[in-house]
Structures are given as structure tokens and as C-alpha cells.
Image (cartoon, rainbow, N blue to C red; front, side, top):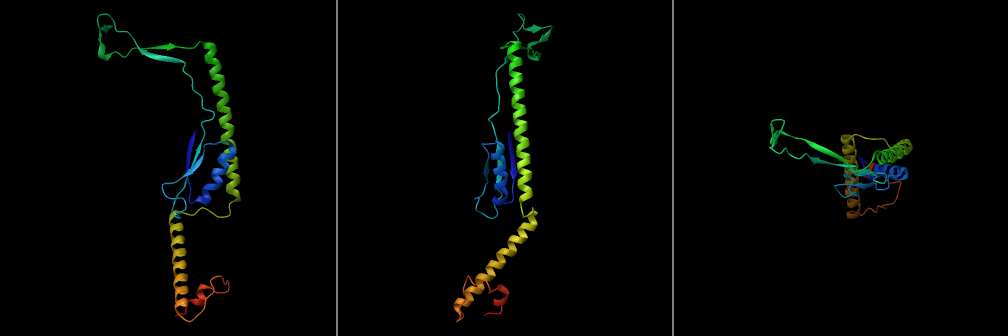
Length: 180
């Protein structure tokens, strides 16, 4: 099974990945086309598991031998599509394979249910809400402009005779806007 979930940030991807691994999807991971530390990256959580996959060869399909005159029932050989299925296992072995496959389906279904429960539990504990792409872009733009303004004010303070302590929580941006 493979399930890809696009997330808004690495912080949103982490609880999904944790839920997937805890539920038993051990091959799960996070990937992105951009660097994951990039604030504009959209990490993709890949929920994967091949642990309960099941394969078995039970038969082969072969083309039927052509008729001696090159036709079957008067039809040209090109139009014939006769195939013969040859069973490689007996019915008892096939029934055993069906039982094993059904057990794996049950185990996979339980694993998916565990993942759902852990995912919903993780999403209920999140304090931040999902934001639409445009809302997030606008917020990020405002935050960037705010940081830029703070840096400009700090640079003005350094250039002038004013002394500004970077870590002083009492100095707010609005208090420094009149500084030249």
C-alpha cells in the first residue's frame, strides 16, 4: 500500500509520519521537491508498507497450438486469440493461498484502522488550524515585511547614536517606528 499526503509544512508532516510508523507502516517517510527547511516547501508524507504483500504463481497462460491447416473453424490465424490456462497448483494448495491472502487482508485492514485512529488523535491535539494557500502566503508575506521593517529600524539605530538592545522584550516595533 502507498498513500501520499501533501502537507503545509514539516510541522504538519511530523504527526502524520509518527502516526503511520506507529500504526505499522514502517517504510513511511517524508519527501519534498524542495529543501525541507525552506518555508515554502510542501512536504509529502508517503505512507508505505509492503510487509504483508503476498505473491504466488498459480498458473500460466499460453497461446493455443495452431491448427494444422493454419486456421481454426475457418477463421484466419491472425484473428484467432485462443489461449490456454495451465494450472501449476492443485485446488487444495490454491485454497491454502486464499486463506493466507485473506489473513493478510485482515491484518492490513487493522493496520489502516490503527493509522486512522492515530491520525485523528494527532489532529485533535494540534493547536494550529489548516490555512488555505493564499491565506498562508499573505501571512508569510506580512511576517517577512515585519522582519524586514525590524531589521531596517535596528540598522538605523546602529547608524545613529541610539543604543538598541536586541533582546529587550519591552521595545516593540511600533515604539521604534518614529526613530530616524
